[in-house]
Amino acid sequence: MARPRIKDVARHAGVSEKTVSNVINDYTHVSDRTRQVVREAIEQLGYRVNLAGRHLRKGRTGIIALVVPELDIPYFAELARHVIREAEQCSLTVLIHQSGADRAHELAALAGFGSTFVDGIILSPLALTADDLRDRTGFPPTVLLGELLEEGADHVAIDNESAAREATRHLIALGRRAVLAVGGRDDSGLGTAEARTRGYRAALAEAGIAYDPAALLPVGSFRMPDGARAVARALREGARPDALLCLNDQLALGALRALHEHGVKVPDDVAVIGFDDVEGGRFSVPTLSTVAPDKAAVAKVAVQLLQHRIEEATAPDGVPDGATPRVQAPQDRIVAHRLVLRESTEGHGGR
Image (tube, rainbow, N blue to C red):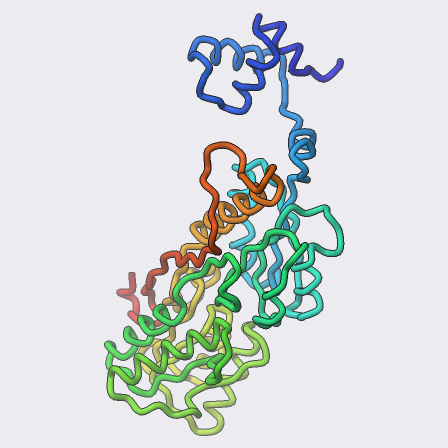
């Protein structure tokens, strides 16, 4: 049986093809009765919108790319799920690419992978520099996630410095004074780890606690084995912390294992807090206190920004489709975060 077309729907509903198109595109100047008749015809005939044809008529493919450093880091996997859900609401398909935090791979993504098969990019960069991002002439529309590397780019993130300050304040409010930062980086970089370290140091200063560079425990990557190794090494070298600020939940889960193996009780001896609120932290023993970014909001804002930039790039004279006003300046959007307090800082009364 042939696939029903717009003209078949129009004939069945007794209206023009233009009216069917207006209903499909949800234009307002269609009466409620006509809209209902057309929708019933669409349902009865099993008509489906040809999204590929619609996108191509607008000079688009309907495909966007989400580029993240590592797919097996739970935060990025959970974020990808939210991005896919938001993209579906805009009739967009998401291509997911893993950069491995490699500059060459991130540059290739920024250039649209050397082709025109993606309409735009949502990119979480770890290796790119501000210079890499300044001249993107001819590149696809791009929205950056994480710390802001270049003011000329659309950007979505939580306030990482503020979030780390709040998490460290929580540890200090518990009476903890020897707070180590697992994954901390004390340099002038613009990355997420650097921002969280600045927040950690600010909270120490507010509490009158002297900062010791040795309190930063460096890691090779932000995975559980790295967190476990960093904490185990610090304990072997004589460190006696009473709290750990871990710069993501993977490091925190690894730290919990190292503390357990060294006979250190959590949170009685050492309180532990992480970042990202990944699912594993809700089932660890003890459950993990964490900074929870609003991942759904990150995805929603990123997709909305990117969709608007795609409209600007493909509409005649740079005027987006419909009535949406053009966004002239790049957008720096901060989304919400909150502290989720569980057993690793609060004990079995954690909430």
